[in-house]
Amino acid sequence: DKRLLMQIIDVLPFGVAVVHRDGTDLLANSEFDRLAGAYRLRRAGAAQLNVACLPLALRTLLSSTEAHGLRGARPRHEAVFVAGAGEGLGLFLEVGPISQHRELDRFGPDVFLISALDSNRTHQIKPEVVQRFFPISASELQVLDLVVKGMTNAEIAEARGRALETVNSQMKAPIRKSGT
Image (cartoon, rainbow, N blue to C red; front, side, top):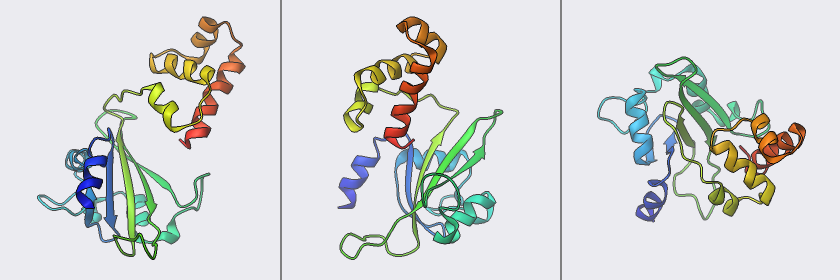
């Protein structure tokens, strides 16, 4: 049911949209709507991406599934950066084709999932929520909690009485386990 799906994705702190290759939004949460407006990704007043004005990399990814999986460790997922107002700030878009499934397909062919994260905004990470979804050890959770509080790996190593290499390893594990 589309209403139930919208209720679920609308509470996410990042933008999510299901988009046809021609740019038509089939589904988008309110954060994606906000970001599309802020970064002028859509035609004025339309539920369609302004494909002609999108960065070439994003247009290429939306043009064909063949453009996906050419590099990186995550097959068929590619990322695009759209520069914002400040240096190094902007919109990170991850684009992945949605595979068709005989029984579950609700969108049809040539459809992509786009997730969008605005680096101009701070995002609250709750380590205990991350641990509910991924197999993170107690030590990794403690390190993640200190990172969320703004500590560097060197500061964490000193505070926990651990070697920097140990902390580095404990930081890599949640990243690997969550696929981020």
